Amino acid sequence: MKILLFGKNGQLGWELQQTLAPLGELYAVGRAELDLQDLSALAAFIRERRPQVIVNASAYTAVDRAEQERELAFQINAHVPRVMAETAHSLKAVLIHYSTDYVFDGGLGRPYIESDAPNPLNMYGHSKLAGEQAIRQIGGAYLILRAAWVYSLRGDGFVRKVLQWSRSQSVLKIVSDQVSNPTWARSLAEITSSLFANTRNDFLNYVQEKAGIYHLAGSGCASRLEWAREILEFDPRKEEQAARELLPALTSDFPTPARRPLFSALNCSRFERTFHLSLPNWKESLRLAMKPVQ
Ligand SMILES: NC(=O)c1ccc[n+]([C@@H]2O[C@H](COP(=O)([O-])OP(=O)(O)OC[C@H]3O[C@@H](n4cnc5c(N)ncnc54)[C@H](OP(=O)(O)O)[C@@H]3O)[C@@H](O)[C@H]2O)c1
Figure 1 (cartoon, helix red, strand yellow):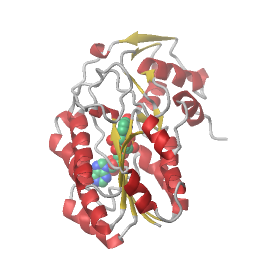
Figure 2 (cartoon, protein in one colour):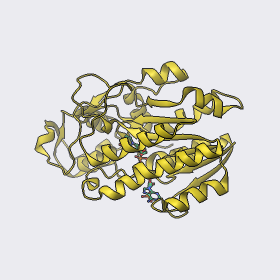
Figure 3 (cartoon, protein in one colour):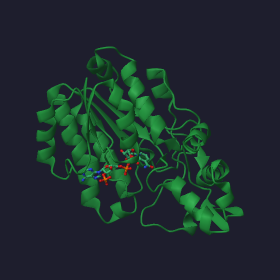
Figure 4 (cartoon, protein in one colour):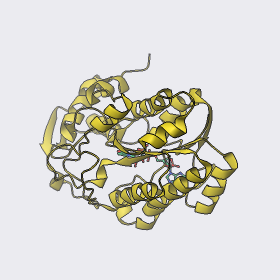
């Protein structure tokens, strides 16, 4: 199987490089190989390689900056997936794409299911929703996997930030009114690759039959405060922590350019029922993610 992976240097893309490699001929692409802003180059690039599967882990993920860089956010999060879907469709290839809990406004009061109406609060969410809509309109063999609060120990996400703050501040104030599902990039990459193992040779028909949007995030949910508490607990170098107190704060205490949904946890039952696979509990994944490498 010939697999074309975009976004190879991102949190998820880097992990997908490891988990997809044993499944076939993997061609992993980063910005150095192709700048995705050039849409006609993108279509030609895919056609030349004639993949059977395209996995799109690339995205514009700077949530606050997207309020200013609206056009760029839509280019990468809406137009790029559209071109990928069109090209995949014409090549009879599968497209696996990722989206976000930020397509929701967070006001529902229970974990979201796929049929709940999206209503993004910020430009990032709008651009990701436009990407979903473009792929659905084109149709074919596609899976849109909506994740939430994706983290890895590489890069500069929430886990690394909490560890850094804990080294320099004696009191940490973390918001307790934002709730979702912390999702380890590695476990998301592993479960994506497990989808291939569900079928032998006919991945195209298998995905075509099940095409659609699925919620796929760490099982269980947590507030940012609860997440931070566990990060400090699993910190392999606890003795370096200067933080003595962890206090709850409100989202409104830290104004940001982009509004964030308050309760955007995802219910992943549809994915579990359809593919007989599920992600581990978020705390268990975090413990593994933070385990020191022996
Ligand atoms: N992070 C989260 O909390 C979160 C939550 C829910 C859903 N998701 C979704 O999960 C997926 C993976 O997210 P992630 O956290 O792994 O993202 P990430 O770490 O920000 O990685 C995104 C990748 O896209 C690449 N990219 C962006 N613009 C590009 C361009 N013009 N040309 C070529 N490459 C470009 C980036 O390249 P460079 O490395 O060169 O910049 C980066 O490697 C995305 O669809 C995201 O929307 C993420």
